[in-house]
Length: 433
Image (tube, rainbow, N blue to C red; front, side, top):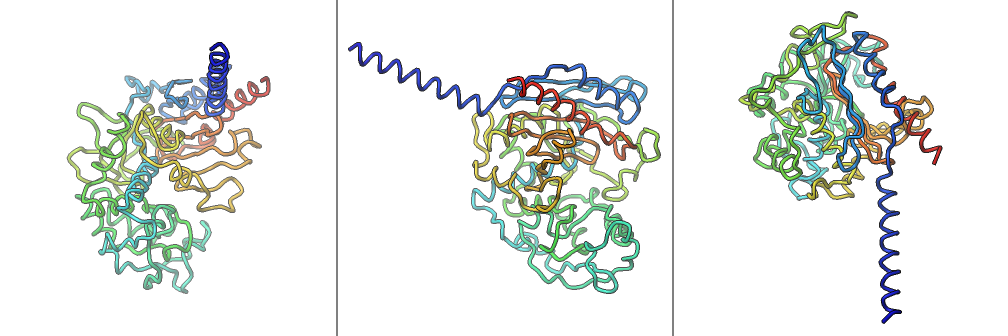
C-alpha cells in the first residue's frame, strides 16, 4: 500500500511540475521596472500639443492590468476624464473584428474564401477598373507620380473578385486619399458614410470603378467594408447583429460595438494638419470625402472597416482572444488553426519591416534593431491615432488610445517611443534572469 501511495504521490507531483512549466511557457511574468518613464513618454507628447489626450493600457493574457496611464491636455479638454472605459472611435481597428466574423462564418460553412463576391452582391457584376489613359495600372504609380495618371479611363474587370481578395485588400476598393485626384473626387461625391443602409451603400459603391483588377496587388481601402456587406447578405443579418451574436455577447466583451450607447458622448475630433493642434472642421478628416461615420444608433449602416467604437478595456479583450488562439471567457469563437492563419504571412511578404497577415501587421527584426519593440508583434491601428499590439512571446496586449488626425512631426513617433521604452525594460529584466 505504501508503494502505491508513493507512486501516486510522485505521479501527482510530476503532473503539477509539468503543468507549472507549461503555464510558465504560455504566460511568462511581465515585469515593468519603471512605470514613471513610460508615463513621461506619454505626458511629453500631450504636453507638447501633439495629442489632445493619450490613454495607454497593458493587459496580460488573463486580462489583468499590468500598466495604465492617462494624460489629458486640459486646455483642449478641460473637463475630460479618459480611462479604460472611455468610448473611442477606433476606425480601422474595426477591420480585424469584421475579418474574424467572416472567418467564423467560413468555419460554419456559411462562406468560403474563394466565393465570388458577386454571389452575395450581384450589384457589383459590372464594376469597371480605372487605368491611366495609356492603360497602365494605377497601382504602378508612385505617390509623387499620381497626379500624372489623370484623367483615367475605365476598362472591363478581367478577374473574379473573391472573399479572400476582400480580406487581403486585393479586391480594388479604396479610400478618398489615394493621391489620384480624379479617383478621390469620385468616391468623395458618393459620400459613403451617409448611405441610409447597406443596400444604399452598395448602390453608391457600384457607381465607382475599382483601382485595380482584383487579385493583382495589395491596395488598402474599403475592402473590409465590402466584406461586412458580404457577411450581411450571406446571413440575412446586419453586421451589428453578427458582432453581438458571435463576438461580444458570447465572450462577454462590453467595450466594443456599433452605435454610441445612450447618454454617452464621444470626444471631439482633432487635427494637427496645419501644425496647430485644434478641433477638426467638417471635411478635414477626408478619408471618405466630406463626411465620416456618425455612430448614431438609429443609422442602420455598419461599416465593417471603419464604423466601430470601443474602449481600451473592451478592445484589449478582443485582442486577448486572438492571443488565446480563439477563445475568451470560456467560449471558443475561432478554431486555433484559423487564428494562426490570421497572423500567418499573406501579403507584403517581401517588406523589410515585416509582413501582413489578415490585416494584422507582424513586425520584423528591424523593430528590435531600432529599439521600438520586438520582432513578431501583431500590430494594428486606426485613422484617429488608435493603436494596438499583441506580444505572442510574452502574452500581453498593448492599447494606446487618442483621437487626432494628421499629427505633426515628430509626434507620430509616440507609439514607437513608448514601445521602445517598454521593451528596453522588458529586455533588461529578461537578461537578468
